[in-house]
Length: 253
Ligand code: IPD
Ligand code: CA
Ligand code: CA
Image: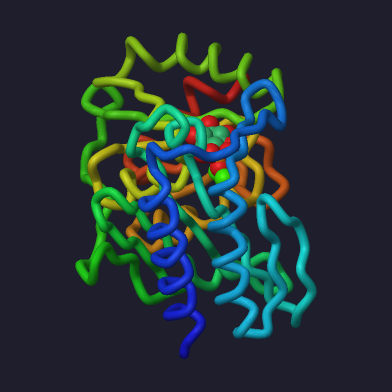
């Protein structure tokens, strides 16, 4: 089976576990102030690792860390949106991506169990939702844009989110926090949102949606406008047409 097909299989199988245990009894722990983990995160990650191990590539899972393999690495977020999951809100996903030795993202897959939506992308081959090619929106005015945002787990990330709220909320059509980074990227890729902004994204949140966004025609930089890399501390992922207008608002954060 190709790496892309293994990625699709992994997120769908994980999604099945998430759906089956939704609104049921399971253990919940607090890793940090804004960071929950459930037994189901762990169960889903175990399933994904079992499938992706067959490819021979290394794996970096949010919950279990590094698993050695060859030079390519799978980045795994088994349940993106754990807080929503615990609140019995259906905005959560399962996400994986494969990167090479130079941190180039080769392919990725994001699955939303509740809508049965499978997003995926392969470098230079476009981004798709259930087989339909995706394109970012044409909106080029900030006032007409719906912007979504996340923030990382550190207190300074939350403080930046408070500041960005003040800088964007009244300047755009609306600003929403959905609670699953991969879903937020996919909203921009499918043109239902114009931009996703994220202070403090760790790699398992920042990587899987990135290729889907780019292959759908989107653009990604830091808040300051420099090239986004895996070690960047901030992220603007947009349709490209409102990118400069957002940098203007966020460049000093
Ligand atoms: C979280 C979600 C959330 C974002 C957090 C992430 P998790 O992922 O994507 O929207 O604000 O920074 O960590 O912990 O549910 O996988
Ligand atoms: Ca996540
Ligand atoms: Ca997670």
